[in-house]
Length: 156
Image 1: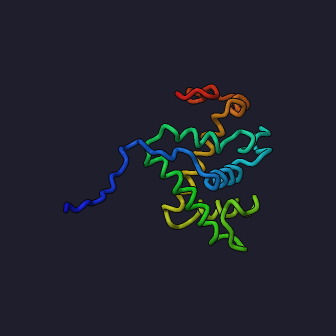
Image 2: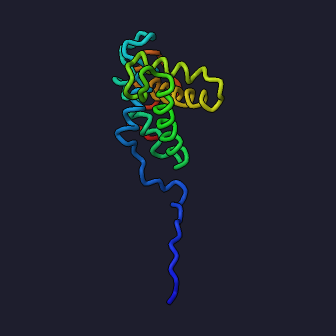
């Protein structure tokens, strides 16, 4: 009788099947975005991250990205959610903190002495701010006419 062996074959590059955030990941991304860009912001534009749909825009940005980038986003969201436990009192994940608590955690991440932790902060801030400033109403309010500001729904 011939012996059968099962072999795990990784999917081909770029063929990620889970190209949507889970509800948990989406809540973490929304919490991060709202901490970075609260409503009634300092720029005089009333829309914050929630009103501009930043979490959805970040998720759509990654839909056509290579699988490694997609999983990097998911790992960053998991890390920031769990790292918050060490900086919150009482201990809680980021999505379960108050807006002020989220702000304290993100400031701590941005000033952390360990470089990869600081990079986590800057990666998430870049993704959220890039998608916020590309929102048509926000870009128009700022008078932005840069080439990367594209019409809503334009995938290019």
